Amino acid sequence: MNFGTIDIVIFVAYCLLIITVGLLVSREKKGHEKDSKDYFLASKALPWWAIGASLIASNISAEQFVGMQGSGFAMGLAISTYEWMAAATLIMVGIFFLPVFLEKQIYTMPQFLEKRYDSRVRTSLAVFWLLLYVFVNLSSVLYLGALNLEAILGVDFTMGMIGLAAFAVIYSLYGGLKAVAWTDVVQVIFLVIGGLFTAYLSLELVGEGNFLNGLGDLRKEAVDHFTMIFEKDEFMIPDGTGGKKDAYLDLPGLTVLFGGMWIANIGYWGFNQYITQRALAAKDIHHARNGLLFAGFLKLLMPLIVVIPGIAMYVLVSREGGAGEFTAAMTDSTKGIIKSDKAYPVLLNILPVGLKGLSFAALTAAIVSSLASMINSTSTIFTMDIYRNYINKDASESNLVVTGRIVGVIALVLAMITAPQLTSFDQVFQFIQDFSGYVSPAVVAIFMMGIFWKRTTANAALIAAVVAIPLSWAFGLVESLPFLDRMGIVFAILLFLMMGVSALDKHRDASKAVQIDKPWLRYGMIGIILATIGVPIYHGLDLLGLSNIVRGIITLAIAGLMLWSLLAFQTEKESEGDSEAMDESWFELSGTFVAGSVLICGILVALYWIFW
Figure 1 (cartoon, rainbow, N blue to C red):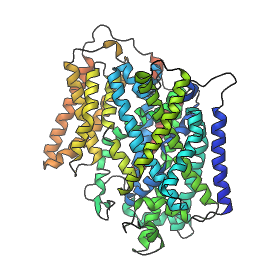
Figure 2: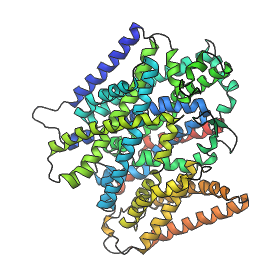
Figure 3: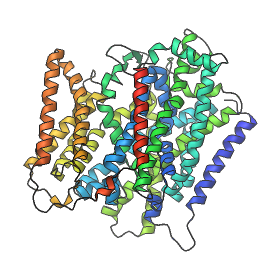
Figure 4: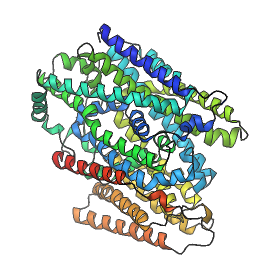
């Protein structure tokens, strides 16, 4: 990319602004030493708008800017279901889960598991998350970020990783979550404005100078890229090796609405440390909920920024018929095939002077904000759940902060070692979803059962944690089973397993149960579970060659058994020693939150109606 002087000025100004803001907000009042609450929970003083902005800045990274645009190039608007369903999930988290976490006054999600179950479950899930953050999340963000620095600026891949890591470390390790959250407010402005400009110009390029013509041409020339729900064998996409695969394997029909997509989203937005940590740092429950709502509205906007430009690149490449400037730029020089994840860097290269710097700043903002968030959450979990519990139980507050900083650096080094191994994937975004899916069913099952089914025992949760990955791996061997359906099936099995073990377990600690005296919340969770498991089971039975009628009967039977089990399990007479019920005020919804939630749901219905 040929940067003009104004591009360099914009980008340097962005870098200096982020570092300055990060260091300024990290300062403590004279005489006050930063403690673990300051470092890991931003002194519990974040307002709703900072929470919402930080959630989006932490979530939208190179995996979306680059990976999701690559998926947009390959399969079109359908990949937007991750963004749009996330908006609905954020509402659900605000209603069902967030009040419980705030009432428990926790620092980390594993800490809740010890309060609800025991230390074994806490440690098991802490290790799960640490491995996921370092070897999947951090490594993928570094890989995609460095890949684009190489493609855009010609920066060596390894030096690019080091540069991005150093940028994130400069302010995040010193200031902790407070620095991360407040710089995210600035980052999300660059992210949205730069992303919208890139989307506008990509459509203008398709329309040969006219934005509206480009929008119309996009719908005409990429008709198959504007379908939200794929049927089996309907649409083929690149497999990363020069061949093709069925898009249904990535987005299997109705499963994106009633199936594994819920598990992926609930696991990510509801029980993921580097996401929920922002809400845990809120001033109060209302700021936390409104922050989620603000993030939900921003998620509705994201496909315009992270998917549409990818579809535009698909149209431009298609017009060349296999030979041309865009085709050559999209082609991997080592494999000689078109690489979907090259869509965004190629687009950046053709932006006019001035907007290159702004768009590149937006990409860098997305990468660095996510890196900073993941570093902080990785260090939080290790420090609070591993170090303080097993290595140094008497650690001082200053020692905890120092440990967190050291762990952040180590995590980055490990991620940089792993990142180059991701080059074999055509769509790194799908790699992230796939591997996260090995853990998500267990995480969602353990938390949901722990919150809404009082008789769930620690042994049941531990067994679910232990068998989840082998079970997911076994189902993963079935090549024709989409990973989202795999997640739904594994989730159903884990629920049955946890109920069975809990029913037989005589070592239940009733004092640790979460007491929620609002039946509509419990029955709402039952409805969500039934909506989640039905379609994946129906799809899975197709692999046995059964007729639609037989598959339907078996699916209804399994769903009925699940319903009966959950209702019987929940209404069984409680034993003595149960914990005190939660204050009902935690679950009271403000008029703003209700109105905003209804509006988001209405927009979602309209979007799926239009693009079904």
